[in-house]
Image (cartoon, rainbow, N blue to C red; front, top):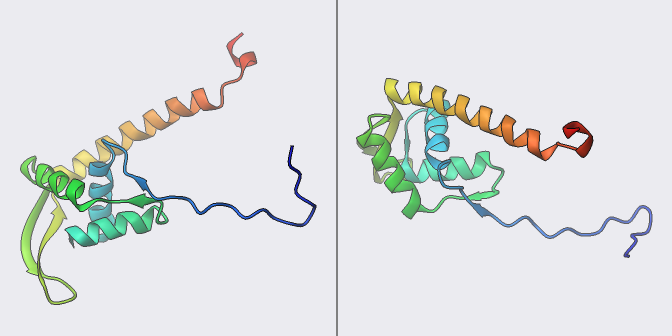
Length: 128
């Protein structure tokens, strides 16, 4: 058993960036567009990483198919514009249907998180 002397903190390994869990990226994209307004794909990826405290890594190869799918489903719309560094970029914005979907998915995730939390905090005496 290793003991650390009082007053001396052990150095912790920096937390490695994690990939976004499947099924959560669409919700994160919708929420990002809801909060920040229209964004180009690279901006969406960076904002998701920023909001996560740089704990998530958003792969462009994963993000763009999600944006395309959301657009095909009518949750987002896009148009070409000029980025802050003067490059041509596709900007995505939330639609009315996207706002509805965001409300529904947010509620579903909150219910799922509450359910999983019940298992995390469960103790043997709770089950007798």
